[in-house]
Length: 122
Image: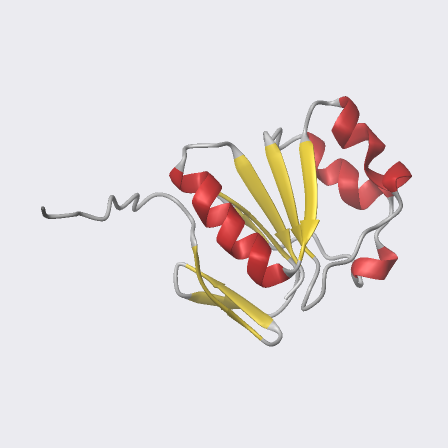
């Protein structure tokens, strides 16, 4: 049986990750980045994961993803739940995981045609 990879040329997928960077469609990013199927946002620039505040989370309300994945770097970290309360109230699922896990999970959810966004700290 022949298997064919279904390619979605118009979709952004993570193609690599490593110490201090991620790559989307072969383009390398070494700063926080937000990735959706259709767009890559580089204007979301919190100084670091520990410095996240409510306005950083409010950014995602306009994107209206079904699921929002946070890649927190080499290790999984969790912010205070009060910071992202508005996202949960809007029905957006929020998950925090290491950056490599977030990249893999994003690609899988995207392949399932889920409306997913990833906020990545390399």
